[in-house]
Image 1 (cartoon, rainbow, N blue to C red):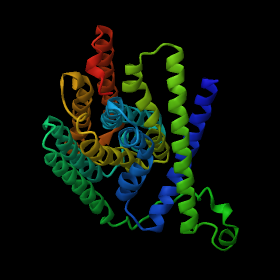
Image 2 (image 1 turned 180 degrees about the vertical axis):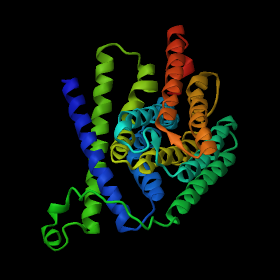
Image 3 (image 1 turned 180 degrees about the horizontal axis):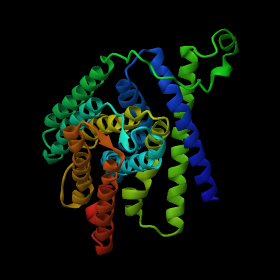
Length: 356
């Protein structure tokens, strides 16, 4: 039964991702937004909702020390998964479609947009991880850090929305919900009304969130049935499920040749995840957002996220181009961290992974 639920949930997430990519492009077109704003802000925040809700619910609404630990683990897991596994999957998608792409595995991305995103991620996440070294008392330094992170993200969003849209707009696929507005469809079949676009985006987000919830639940049941260690599940398996929306959206855009949207969807989510959820941890789970002997392995994921990002985007900045094969390095960093986690679990040092 769990496998059936898993397959259905995966289909629901895929359907939601397809509707979302189509709807969010039309939303950006209606508001005359640049690709960077659409991919790095709108799409990134929208598809980050499933995994963002997990730590927020755990920290704000659950009770007990374990709830805060789960929340912090989820917050640390998001940038790690995005900078490693999401990059790897996107790179594989590029290589698979390289034969029918004009430039092969060279991605026609706006490297300026991606470099902009990664600068903000590096600064914000470094500040967030640095706050983990602060003492529990007094509280005010963490509030200052939270305010700084909020200001960084606000400035980041402002910068993307200030960009002008390209004069030559790419052709968009018809809005999937266009036939629901029969009156307007008869008059203007190719240009949907904004309210219909909004309806499709909200419906897509609903499908993504519902699908992600059932997917994670099915994965947990399957892991329990086969005796998979709970710590390994929390560290590795569950985050894969909650990051599926970004991966599927990016794959869809890669297949359509819209690489800036595909990559911006991931890099923008990294900026969001390094700021907004971290603020929640700093303000409401400060005792868990600390680097101690029991959380070394958990916070090591942040180091992996920095290393993987540097290995991918520093060469991009130097060469002025990004290749699909360059993204594959993310898989190596993911495998390295997985080996570390498995090794710690095998040694029986459970305290090292308690933050997850």
